[in-house]
Each structure stands twice: as structure tokens, then as C-alpha cells.
Image (cartoon, rainbow, N blue to C red; front, side, top):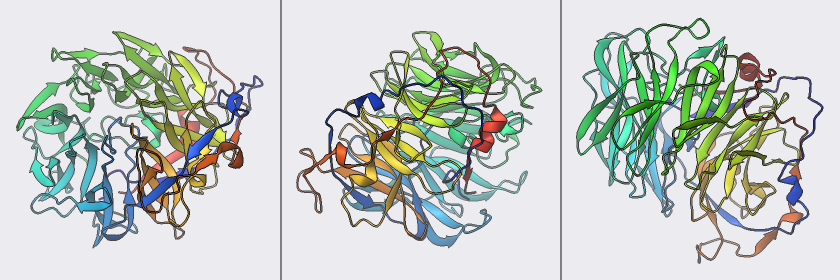
Length: 515
């Protein structure tokens, strides 16, 4: 089984461009003299198979910690019986200081292992097969696990056949979802509901709490000190917890009742927040849609996510802070999603124009387009650190050609990270996932034969002296590819201008998980 390793396929649908141009903030900085450090690219490698991955962006979970430790999955040489084509069994890895460690699975595991989150202590949360087949569905049972000092612990379920661990904090608290024994017809696929004929999901990924079909209720859970706690729901049968911060505050999604909607075929899904008092708070959806999801949570208790508009024909990004949910606005149509929020409250993600989608930052409630590297037509921002350095991906929509990972710092413009990487790696850096406060970057690269590799970029700076192969000279921004400023139209926060519907967005950009 391939749980969440994406193959990136981009297809641009053509729409009429609104005539109101916006001068991108990053373009205003073009004339400023900017200098950047070089980076040393490390190919994390595999366990004998062709691919490895570090691509859990969009869930707000860390796969790169403050010490530069990275986690993800890498192919083995064993075939995957639950994958349709060109599939190898994947095992979770932990990479630190040049050493890749294979994280073993549970006894009987024949389905692979998957790492989802990592804390600053190097503890990894994730999922492993346990060798059992669910007799009700015929699919393998996957259970939540915690790797602590490279030793695996089964976190268990609520009595049902399956669970999944997502975020982990430095206390060792883990959140996710687990099955109980109560029959439930809405649990399979939850919470990736359909808007029309397309999934109402963030960033083109299938975000099901449990990957395989299931027959019983899925509930958000908290694992701590060897125990599992059922966090309950907002009134419906199913829920999932995606994020937890260092204070133990939790964010996730839940059905609010058991009445299916005409637009999605499932009950209304609302986001929730659980504070230190343990109470689950419904964050609601002021735009009138029936699907809302969370994508991030910072240590100030601020939640980000996206919410569908009335009729579930599109969606807007939101920020929930101090008990108030605010529509962050888009670039002209009902389409935009935040992907990460730092502790200063700066948010990054993407927003759509009538023709494409672009990386943006929201700061103090103001939408700031970040621009694209010249020649690219679409992109997204995935990570931001406390210094305001941002990483993401951009590409040429509709070509199927691998994109490029970029860096935005010192007020911009965005710069192709491949122009900063010391030559000789043999890897095209296609996707910047995360950046920590040391300036280290994790993401994915592509080899000349098309294989994907998890990659780490180490800055050649004063904080990383003596890195073998590093070039410690500076790169003049004027000597590399400049930012391109596409013509886009800005929609004010809260505006509901129809243009890109959920259906057209599905054609505009999709990602197909390897299953």
C-alpha cells in the first residue's frame, strides 16, 4: 500500500482573466540587491527500491525538526500487493547528520510503514501494518505507532480494526484517529467529502483519516503516557485530530450530525479546537458550506484551514484566533488554502486567480502574493520559519513536468533553489516542504530517470561550518532567475466571486496518491 506518496500531475484549465492587475509584492523587491547562501543537497536515498518521499505538506505536521532530523518513507525491493502499478513496499525512515535509519514495523507487518510527524526529540509518529486482514472489508489493518529512539510501540485502537497517528509534540503527546466497534456507514473516506464530483480536500491530496475502507466509527484520539483517550465528536459519528501544539491544544474535523448533504453525500463536517480545558469547540463555517478542514495550529492556539462556500462550489482560507474565525480572502475566485502558520502568526499557502493558483502569505490579515520564478505559471507555499523564510513549489501548469522548489527570503523575490544548490548532486529539487529555524530545508527531488527522492538542503552558512562540499561564497540574486509577476485579480476578504468551481479546480490541479 502507498499511503500518501503523491505523484504531482498539473493540468491548467483556461478561464477568462479578470482585467484588474495586481502588482505582486515580491516584484516590488526586484530592484533591491539580494544575496543568498549556497546549499548542499543530500539525497536521502532508499532501501533498495526506486523512490523515497518527504511530502506530508498541508497537514501542519512536522517532517523536519529543529535539529535537522527528517522523516519520511523509502521504497524497499519488496513488491506492494496493495498497489496497482510499479509499486514497492515502503518503510519509514529517520535521517540525521548523513545517516538514514530504517524504522521497523509491527510484528507481521506486510503493508509497509509510514512516518507522519516528528518532534524535536526525534520521536516519530506514524502508521504500520500488523499482518491482520479485516474480515469485514478484505483490506489490511494499519495501526498507529510511535518510534522512540528507533524502537516501535503500537499505540492501539478504540477496539476497532485500525488507527493512524498524525502530529506529535515535544511532550510525546500524539493525536490522530482510531476505530471503535460501532457500525458506521459514513466512516470510509472520512473526512474527504465530495463537492460535486471532486473531493473537498486541501491541496489536492486525499486526506482520509484511515486509508482503507472501514465499517465502524472513526474517532479523534489522544495518546499519552501509554494510554488512548477518545476525544469524541461534534455530534456526528466520526472525527479526526490532525494537529497538536506544545501546550497540548488540538485541532481537527468532525461530522456535526448524521444527515447527509445533497452536495457531498455525507453529513456536514466542521473544524474543532480543543483547549487545555479539554473541551471540543466547534469553529463553524460562516460562508455556509458543508465541509471545513484544518491544516495548521501554532503555539498561540491559532488554527488555519479552509471552508467551502454555500453550495460547496469552492472554498476560502480561514484563520481562527481568539475565538473568531476570519475569511483570509483569495485572488479573485473561491479557491485558496493555507498550509502552515508559524508562532508569529504568519501564514503561507496558495490562492487562486481565474486562470491559475499562486503562492501567497497572509500577514496581519493582509494577503501578500509571493510571485513565481520566471517561466513558471502556478505554485504553492508550504513552510515558513520564525525568520520569515518561505519554501514551496512552482511549475508550468498542464505539462506534467516536475516543478521546482523555491525560497523566498528578505522580502523576496522567490528564487529557484536549484540555482543555489552546489553542483554535482544529480537531483533536481522539485518540492520544498519545510524549513526550520536553522534554515535547513526538506523536500523532494527528481532524478534524471524520473525517480523521486526525499532530499535535505543544508545552507552553506556560518551556522553550518565545515560541511563537506559546501560553497561558502554568496550568490547575487541578480545573477539567477528573477521573479515573474503574473496578472491576477484580487478578491477582498470575504468576497464570493464565482470563477473556479470545485469541478474546474479538480481539472486545474490534481495529485494522485500511489496506493
